[in-house]
Length: 409
Image (cartoon, rainbow, N blue to C red; front, side, top):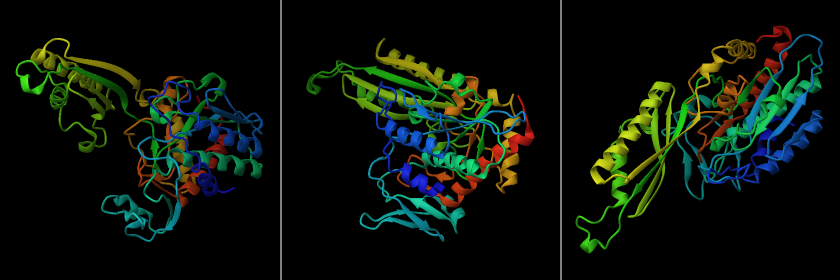
């Protein structure tokens, strides 16, 4: 099976995770794809492939060499974002020669180069797109397809290799992909998440991530007699948000610039709840951001009475650079493999996170590799077939090179 055939098969499975769920995995439908992946891994020769009761898929390709070789892991996630629909995905392969792409004639939906200038670099590529009403699922089903296609090619080739470990996680998109990952059982010396974007991306820096829930308590009364009595939680919530730096938001930042993002709000006169994510590559800066939230709450309470505003902060994951910089040979090995297959490495900070960020702090150094997709979490998501094929070559080259590179820790 080709990497494209695999990818199109996997995106037919709806696997959206759910941040409001307390189950593991957060949606049962993820297990349907997990079971299919186990069957496929066994079919191509990984006899121990299995899915545990929490929806994590594990498999091992034993070494066929007596040389001392590091055990390498490859990890991807099966769930998709809730930012767009995940069911009834209608895909199409576009021979792209430039310009806007008509995704849906009936609904007049175009993917425009003016909105997505990254399209221009894909002239001459075959692009897999949707009809503009759902996401595609390249994040991260492209990564899964590339890993399994690499394994099949490696086994069929009979080439020498060390032990290869495979991990497919649920719930990465809701920040829980590493919650129940069994690092000890996985038993790799290091790993790569195959969960990045455009061809060439090699990432070992990510945001420090925290969340903030802000609760505003109001007092409702008939508006006709509300003077000096009503405390409107809706307007006080707006007031709270106005106390935060207006330019430190996702739509105004890039590169190493951090942000706070109000992504959900429910509000009535009596009660308003705001959900924020806080992100920065620098620990000191994200600590300052948390302090801004606490000070904003103090100001609201000073204006409207003690107990009006509550702020609840929680940390999600940290910048993996803190760990990876002590294992830079993992990055150098990836760069060499990229050079060997004709890929120009692009080392950028991730403006987000991966399972690898948390796994690195759990004892498994785990930088991030590209998948070939663009516009993730969007109805305008797409992936290049040529990029997926090249990334499959890259994964295979990493494995092949490891035999000559030997043990490094």
